[in-house]
Length: 123
Image 1 (tube, rainbow, N blue to C red):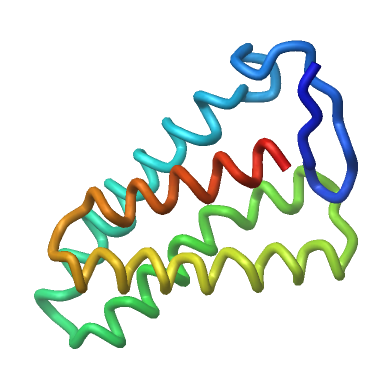
Image 2: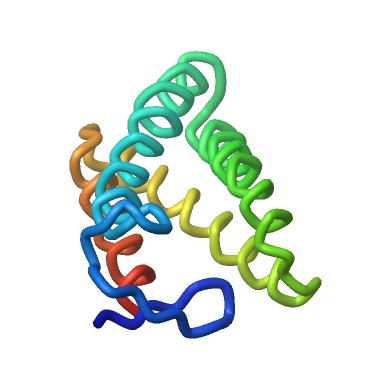
């Protein structure tokens, strides 16, 4: 059995790699890769053609936060739980954007994102 931390409660899953509750592969790999391609690969690149790095990074991080908001409402988080998650996702979006911009490559931010998601899934 594998224990994971999910929205402020400990949940036991029988198999780490099942499709149940999105599974490790879905959370740690597919979500991270897809989000990086969308937010850094597409949005950040488009925004950098129009704005300076700081502005582009803030906008893409806010968009990244915005896509995570429905998850908070479905999970019925408390106000503090919602705030805690929002205050985690926004800085992560800024960090992933900075890594992408500095490296001029999507892979470093993608790997970092997948590692983060994997750690959050396992913890």
